[in-house]
Image 1: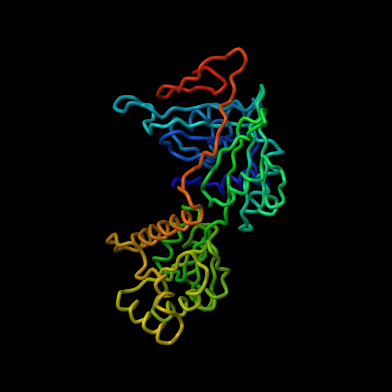
Image 2: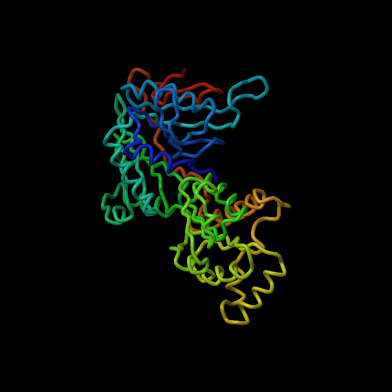
Length: 396
């Protein structure tokens, strides 16, 4: 499954505050057909020729969005364009993914900022919800943004919205849904971008592997917390910006940590005793993943002790990934961190799949094709490789 990279960065950028951008445009992938770099819901904040936050896939696709965004950020109306990624390879410079991407580029207004500020506040509070983008027909196109919290969705009585909002909320983060309001002729497309609780990675042990794991995990938008009882190992300079650093007795700190179903735990302390204490503190928690570093002998002895002493059953212990990480022949701390994060991702995808009950890809519920302008009636033709077609008609 492809995800929306840097969505937290996009929300923070657009939410306002001291670092709020000036006049800018927002590019959003409305839908894809065939193979594409990113799914519907991917977003990028554009300011002139600059990319401020996020991405819609890079390359020629993003360059075209930037070109349009410069005009739109300066006061131009919203636009929708289709971009074909169907180059022939070899000397052909056009992208060869094989798909077609539909992108909305809109001026970002103060009304939009209110919706994105609410989304950012929910992101910080680890509360789920849905960001809704409506594209309304007309010349020029009009775009409306709205944030729906879980309570908002539960209270929604609009029959054209409620079922789709409820369905969208049932899907996990990094999945997007495109749905027109059927029966409402002035609505071209509605994009529902669900935001589930942000996954968090709890690392017990601030040693070299823990530091490397925190660095890799931050790149994947995990909220990272690191626990250790050695203050000198918890220097902020050793970890990515935003890492939550907790100094204290390890088992107690793990027990007190707010572990939920979106928490992934890696036990990487300096010895078997603190590992055992930390494991005892979390083995019955609702964590999505628990992994522990150590040899096969260490794991076997700890299992025997936990079962014999009644701390846990064999079934309880079976949920512990130990020795931690996928077997990729890792030797260095960064390599071990990669093996751990690869295992966490594999578990995460299975968890998300079981929750959604369907393929973990952007799901196209239905997407209306924008109607051509009155003077441009005619059959719609898919663009050739690298060719742009505005859905309102014509190629460029």
